[in-house]
Image (cartoon, rainbow, N blue to C red; front, side, top):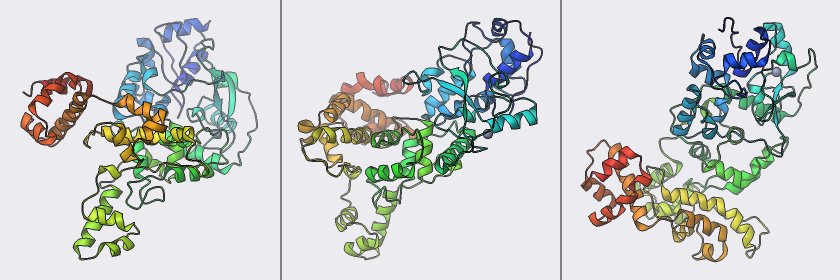
Length: 487
Ligand SMILES: [Zn+2]
């Protein structure tokens, strides 16, 4: 029976609270405590997250707050879960609340590399402060954020303790008091950017997690580049090479920073990389306030839509295209093409970052640099659920990237392989299109009929029938069943 159980301190890791329970309860050996707390007494106490606890332990842990609040305020979930796509974010959270071990597969938890294990860290000033205020020090969550080296409160360097956060350590529950020295002076940080990053990350980390937001980080960061030099006047082109240059320069003094490559930035923008530290660096660089980053919202109209709207209205007022082009500082051809409604989706593109000095026959390097853009283009073609999907072909990708035809198949083998990996048969593509159309109909709250789908897709009945076997690949079972019953 668990008679006494300590209350959690602000920002304390659940692991730390359990360790304090263990040392204060006078167990003869760790095994007895483990038996009391964990369903499997050989379980290794998880320092970042949770374990599968016994009913008695759950009762003690949730005496003053719900399990949901424990996960949000006393585990590292707000760091690893916050920026995941909505469905995965919710699944991971539920997995933690119900103490299912599969949260490890749902959260992007970094593995320690090169055999360098992470340790629990602490701030000597925080420890001194805690001892004064609470009579003991404890393990804080904010000190464990990967990528920060400075205490966000005291601006002094964090210290590594001897407690390793790794699967190989002997299971134990150790309090801060047992591990760290009684008095130790703190070393103040004087690296401004390092301090600013730490403060920013802690602020984002400690904000409530928005469990409902459907906006992805990639989309959000892209939208925040609107009207900066990193997007063209109309907003359809992203100058990622320039962004990369400025970003590197801005964080030059940040020590141990491994987030410096163009392809890494590109992957954050395409949502292929969800890393708390990297997202915070990009957001801080773009001057996004922490409270905006934790509740991501997209503008009602994109930069492109607003720009096109301006062209239309100025033209309707009787202004000629050359004048409009001057007023909006945009190329005449672009303005004219928009005015004449000639602009299509094919112009949503990013520039190929040809580094200066890169010779045109340096195909290996070009292949490497173009690959992230090809991935971006493939995403664009597949659509985001609201935009109509297009068929992924080498030709379509070349068109988006303004590459002359056959360039990819002749010179860029990695890009070609990526496209081939996403190529679909006509029937598979039709299936994707049908799923898109049905979502459109459902979103408009109209009754779903085959006729509506036909009108949206221009698809013949025989084509529709031919794609039916592939529908389950693109739709959840409930939706798939609706589609199969349409005829
Ligand atoms: Zn501190």
